Structure formats: structure tokens, C-alpha cells
Length: 144
Image 1 (cartoon, helix red, strand yellow):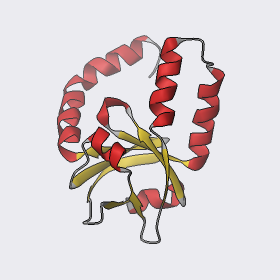
Image 2 (cartoon, rainbow, N blue to C red; image 1 turned 45 degrees about the vertical axis):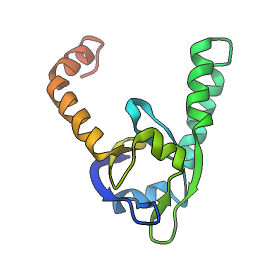
Image 3 (cartoon, rainbow, N blue to C red; image 1 turned 90 degrees about the horizontal axis):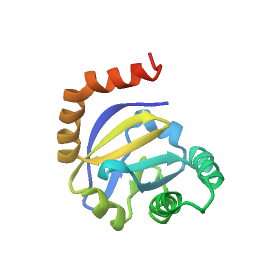
Image 4 (spheres, rainbow, N blue to C red; image 1 turned 30 degrees about the vertical axis):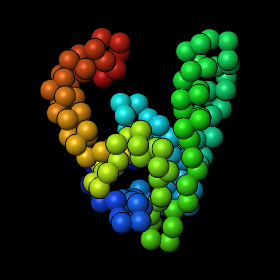
């Protein structure tokens, strides 16, 4: 399980070092794709296979399903983790997420989110403000 928040710099060769706490669980290959809220999602390969299988079950008859599948799969890239624990995020994904010199890795259960540091800060303020209301909604559907 991925938890925690870590800020890292993008090096001059455009690589970013994974947080030490995440390296082992991620393995040697990571799937990076466009995420929601303008961040990137990083998945261990095994988790990506499970997600792929679940999405395949949805079929292609509904426009929303087709669109979301295209969003996730066409944006996906398998990247290698080097011996120093660094990854090279493809340019098109960095552009999508606004990745520049500082990034934030956020552990979110079965995935890691990679954020532009300024976007993360603004987003985090918003969800911290709305946390009570979100908890209330979740409580109304039976989540304790």
C-alpha cells in the first residue's frame, strides 16, 4: 500500500527519483499514465494488469467507457526504474501534468500520484477545506 507525501526535484536530465518508501513495492517497471485532476498515476505492473482487466470488462458500447479507456491507455507508458531509483517520465505526460522542476509524490493506496508541486499545494488546500463535507457524504453511503 502506498501512503505519504514526498517532494522531489526533477534533475537536469529530466529524471525524477522515486521516494525510497515506494521503490520496492513498485518493482523495476512502472506504468505511468494520465491521471485525474491533472496529475499522473504510477502503478506497479501487477496493479496495472488488474486495472486493465477490470476496464476490459466494461466493454466498448458506451461512449464514456470508450473515452475513459482511451484517456488511460493511450496516455500510458511503461518506464524502467534505474539502479538509482529514478524514472524518466515521457515529455507528453510531463506536459499534461505540468511537471517542471519540483514534483510531489502522493501515495494513494494502490497507486502513486505525481503532481506539479504548485498544483498539489492548491489541490491539497481545497480538499483539506472540504474534508468534513466529503466525510459526511461517505458516511451517508455507509463508509465509516
